[in-house]
Image 1 (cartoon, rainbow, N blue to C red):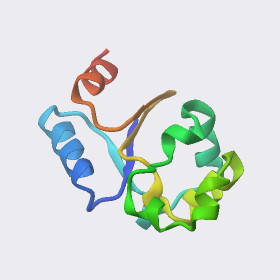
Image 2 (spheres, rainbow, N blue to C red):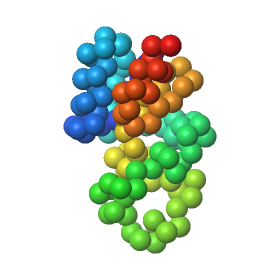
Image 3 (cartoon, rainbow, N blue to C red):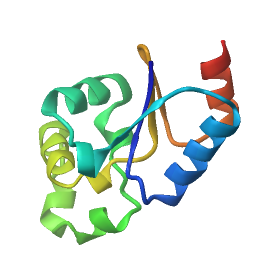
Image 4 (cartoon, helix red, strand yellow):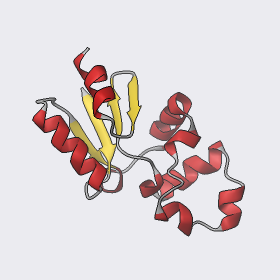
Amino acid sequence: MITMYGISNCDTIKKARRWMDENNIAYQFHDYRKDGLTEAQLTQWTDSLGWEALLNRRGTTWRKLPEATRDTIDHASAIAIMLENPAIIKRPLLVAGDHYQLGFQPAQWQTLLTN
């Protein structure tokens, strides 16, 4: 089963979901905010992708963090911040078996999902 993680009102998520539907690819959508996340999920993702890749440093949620928090962030604090502020996680995160794809890149998704 393919699961797409994100936030339903995100424009990139809307594009990604539309692409999945247009390509007749079955998937389950998991909204970070509504459906929640566990520390175990975040640990698994950060172990596979790296916490730096998973953390969206360009968004408003990141900019709203205190400067001291941003300057001293590490793996453990990143997971805590992502649990508390799921909007800070880059999206979408596509999980297909043991494969992860972060961000919406149609060509890469096509390769991952049709092979």
